[in-house]
Amino acid sequence: MFECILLDSILKLNGERTVYNIYHLLTAKKSTQTIQDSNLFGLTNYFGIYNSLTRQAFNQEIQRLEYHQLITVNPDQQTVHISERGKMYYKKLREEQADYFHLNGEKFHQKADRFSKNLLLFIQTLTHIHRKNPRFIPIIEDVESQQFVKKVWNKQHELGTATILKYLYQDLTMILENFPDDHAAAFVDSLTSLKKVGLSRYQIAKKYYITTHDVYLSFMNIIHAICKAIETEDNFRFLPQLYPVHQTNKLLSDSTNQTFYYLKQGLSIDEIANVRNLKENTIKDHIVEIAYIYQELNWPAYITEQDYRLIREILKKLESKKLKDIKSLLPDSISYFQIKLVIALEGRNNVEENQYV
Image 1: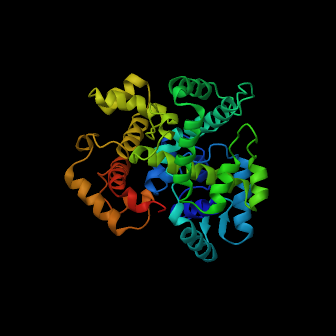
Image 2: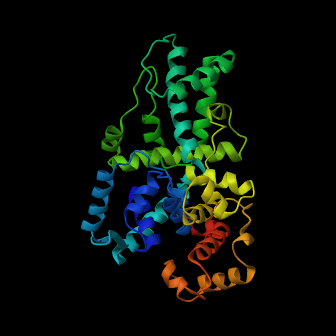
Image 3: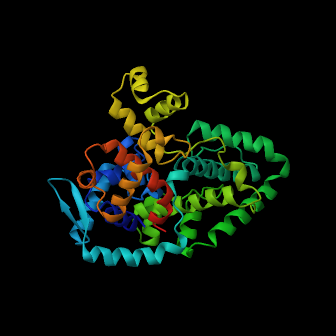
């Protein structure tokens, strides 16, 4: 799965960004550049899906792909291209995984992380209480999850441990039956109960002959599938109780969120720049970032309809996403900011067509 994600990202970037743009994407670096690129190149599904990935491990995987001649690396510019061999291999992987690929980092990367902690800790807690053994070392040290699980148990304990265990079993079975047997089994192996401690990534990787990267991503893929089902269906008996309902997952950097606040107050670009003591170009980049996500952006304040249509026509004709290539075909009066704004607005409408599946 990790190979497929990397090759898909490399294919879509097409050498127009450095390889570390992919690393920043996977680890949810909330910079304006990373967020814009995730939208521009149709990679929002991968945003934040692998927060624990180290730069060293990422480099090793890129080197391995290069060793197997699946990609070519330009060390001077730190850019990568997928080879013809890589394209064929990627196509094979995509076809094999398409039916059970559910990662959606843009929507779930924060909720999935929180939900997975809640789920793991609740199952451990519940199985211990069920056997009247309430003393144990929690596998999740996160205080927020510990408080959340305690609150859920206090609220739902009247159902009884046997009933809640039954509901959880039914809910998880309903999800896991949609995945290959080894994926479902690996997920179950990661759970901790009274009688068994969940296996580590390394132990699961060794048991199923896969990489530790795929262990993690397979687990998160199932978690994302649960998140999606909770938000779109009404078939679960208990899992929604463990779902974080108050988190937002809009892909905006913290600085952009502040700019958005002032935009909604009716301030102009130069006024916001003055208030925030930032350059106008920085505020413009924030506006582009906002344009990818929020429909309420008042874009006619920054570009005429005529210029918008002109840029859109050039975008349709030109395959390259390099701004210099686009700018060279437009009148000098049209700015890079306006080009990026139209790319964002058009990309928001067509983002579903650019996703992995």
